[in-house]
Image (cartoon, rainbow, N blue to C red; front, top):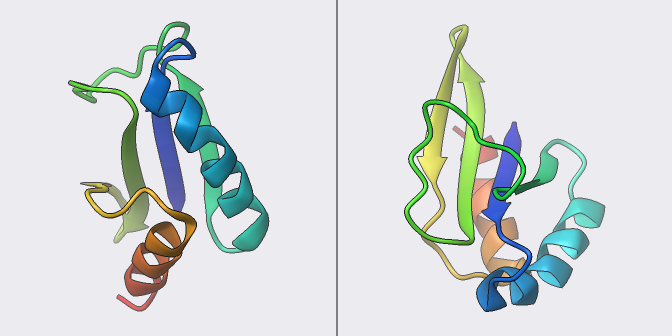
Length: 88
């Protein structure tokens, strides 16, 4: 499982999310938590309309399924979401 945040360094909301996302990466073992700088890296096939955008990716039956994260942008919100996804 992957949790990705697409951000822009100069974006206020992205800057505020960085410490929370960094802490998340230290709390989870079964998920790769990654930050992608959208000013440097473009990912084909993903439409990003606003920043930061958070996506959850999981391989199911050999195919990658992607979900947009719409919950609270807090450590507790991320942990709750990731726990609910790992039970599926």
